[in-house]
Length: 131
Ligand code: AMP
Ligand code: ZN
Image (cartoon, rainbow, N blue to C red; front, side):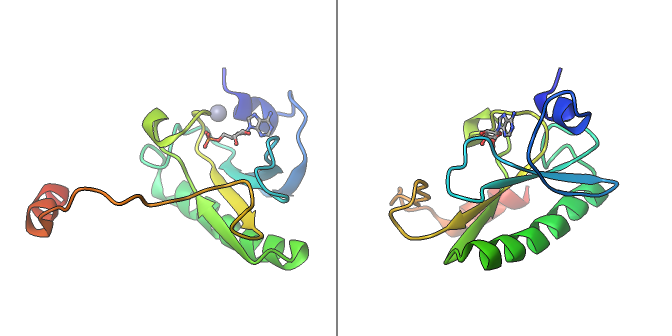
């Protein structure tokens, strides 16, 4: 059972922002900021890593267009477009989705902060990430 598949199948109501053959965009029920929207593929994939490339591109392309539309229509000062992958990254619904979160000012309800962390040897890190 997947709550987003149920939304796509209209078993659960949602506020549809955009829809085409492959993609559905709905208002996030939590509205972290006004206009917070989720873009998801109609085909079920757990996350960005497991989805096929075409599906990801369809979602990203839609997210780009909707981000521009939402910023324009809400008068937001900026926007975060992001996907959480895995519980450790904050993913709570295991159906790939991209958040579009319009940003109004630094005191709005979302904090994305890169904390100072231990210094890393970039050569070592490069070896690690390249495998
Ligand atoms: P994430 O934590 O990245 O997996 O995001 C899941 C998002 O789905 C959260 O921001 C929830 O508020 C949102 N959400 C959960 N259930 C619904 C629903 N029925 N309709 C709209 N958004 C939902
Ligand atoms: Zn699903």
